[in-house]
Length: 360
Image 1 (tube, rainbow, N blue to C red):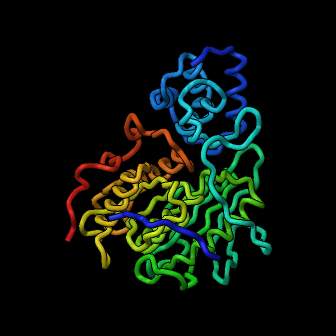
Image 2: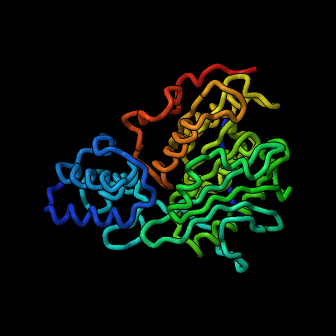
Image 3: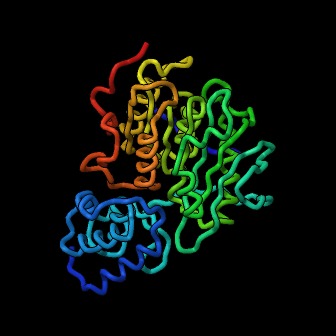
């Protein structure tokens, strides 16, 4: 299975209350991830569109919508805002059509898909640990692909904390890989390779067929060597990946963008210069976030100052919130007014003029 790539230069109108009600009903039916955003934050992040915009956003927030979904859904339902905001919508339009905004290019459905359920499944000869929720018709679930670090195991995915159960509750899937196919280009220290993304393609094709997946919220995560793999997946699967949250990871071993027209969002986490195992993960993480920001993508870097793969729970939660707020093809910055107050103070939006000290 060949996948193409491209060189990476890495280094206002008023409306009736009936319309408001219709907007709210549509949102409740189509919200894919119930991240909590306040009415005020949603309004602040949207462009001004008159009283109609604020009413729709208020309804959205009350229904539990995240910032990006509120902006996009209100815009696509004609409730003000800019046309670009439609690209941030993760739900369906009021007419019942496809989600507004850019759409991912999904891999085909394999002819031999196993029944997806929580437990171990064999994919291309390798065991993969799955957490799979029950299919739901009232909401769409996200997909998360996790890559463990050197000498670790698939159970390392537990580092994601409550996010795993949240995905399952939404009817989505978390897949944690155990071993590599060992072919393609290594993305670090010969633990993971580029061909391993074929396993992700396979599972995603099956998940889209069997579950009600939100195809604009497909994410990846990982620690150490797995963090480098997650970073590499940003480039190698930019055709469908919405974002990544590497924990002591980054990117620097893959130089080709699969879809050069789409830049997934990234939130990196790392320690100080003591976060060192062969490479300085502080350097790799910051440089990766900077490169994404310079390409016009959305990026945040968080230096927790601790050790290797030592992201504390509040940081993991912030990373997960970031991903939920940045669906595939988001064009309006959900954090234009600044990072959410729940984020640790050491997190910064990138790109920046000074990325910070270089470890050596």
